[in-house]
Length: 271
Image (cartoon, rainbow, N blue to C red; front, side):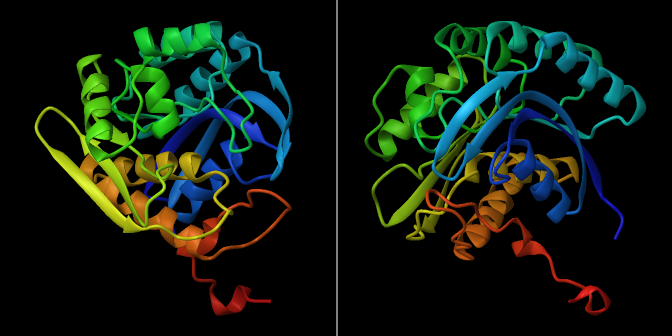
């Protein structure tokens, strides 16, 4: 099988492999894409939480983005963990040189275990500068609350928050509803022309580590292959739900999802 698209991932590393750049690479590969990376931070973490975060110098992040893209031009870019204002500004500067319009931003702010991955000044820079430069932003409810400064309790609040993000310069919003305590999960896709609610039955499991990273990378992969942004969101959500349903149950905390859920192994490679 030959990869159908080339995706550059700008994100932090997760030593446990369930989230971050490791989840991104697995997702892009499992969906038939070619993954390239610019690592923004190294984290020591497992399914129970984050032990430490070591930032990569902004100059090195910039070099990774530009030197990689100069040789292999990405069809789409997925952005994850950006922990400081200087890193965000460095990424913006690099994106202006790469000139790829298909940019998906997952505004990673808090790890599944509650560890804060970005400081308040960085959130301000992300809101004022970066979100205007991307094609789609994919916040979950807690992230959307931080970005919009409103409390989200129901679907109407989700739509209101998505509209606030739209009015702040975002082209497309996918607000994820997984944090709501309801049997049917509702994700809101919104732009200036349309609104779509994706409805799916909530899967009962604690093993959802890395779902946000996985979804944004899946969307980037489908979008890079020529699917519409709306369809890319729909297919990305389906892939994530299928991967959650496998319920791997690795580790003592919030376990990872199964990124191999989309792959059938050829008989000659089966063990």
